[in-house]
Length: 241
Image (tube, helix red, strand yellow):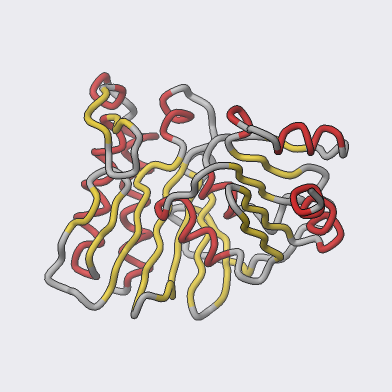
């Protein structure tokens, strides 16, 4: 079985856990602060165990919840966020998923991001960036949406200066609350913007998927866009002063 096949099986099992078995009280229980700095919930830890079961034979796992999980296979490293947007999930807001990045020789060569709310799956490997559905075998190459009207600004609720700059420039955005998943949709929306400290669990898979897009990263601002005009307009807001 290939790594991509194993990752798809793991995501299917997590999806069935959420949508077939459903969340019980333990899923909402809070546990210790995880390796990523956030407090882990029961569903974070349960999903993590599913991914460990399926992916650990392929390499060492670096998880947002438990940190480094050693594997007998030392040739690869897997960066994992078992539930991206777990606060959304626990609040019944339909924008949450999973993020997996596979590294060989310190270079990301495979990645998968899923939207567990609607079943979207994004895969990138040597065959390009493709999109399909959890539990289905059909995947299509991702192309840029030329009709997008809004961008995504993650962590806008704690923005120090980006919010005011976007508002003054009359730039529309939404803030759904799952950064890795937002990056997976970067070919669809006008832009994805993030203000704050970026963690490896949040960005590795998404950065790999956005390698063909325009990117800007300076200080605490990260911007990616498929549209050069929009990219330059937003970038100028942060480099003009």
